[in-house]
Length: 141
Image (cartoon, rainbow, N blue to C red; front, side):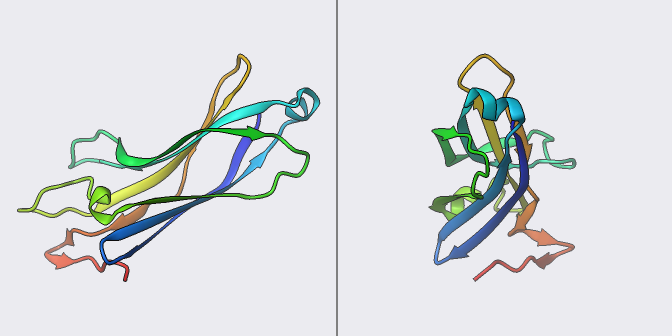
């Protein structure tokens, strides 16, 4: 079974638009190489809601790339995916009266094209927007 390593998320916002760059490496197993295993790839952004929020992590609407077929190679190149969406879509804690910091991760899932168990991993946490101790959190330019 392949492994997902070096998974990183970077988000750049400008004039109401956001671009999330999700980068990672696929490390194939010997079995993947011997059987020429292929995977369906899903890359999505997830809003993280730890306490005191509702505690439910939720996919961010319009922030999912799916059903890409990935063929496993001996030395696969690093993978990089761009997700473009309005900055407002990243506001996963929409509360105008009490803006909260949005916490976002990228989740990559590789599902084998033959019977098998999917592999999934989350990226680093990116924070944006909201207030911390009554001070605005700087937004990227």
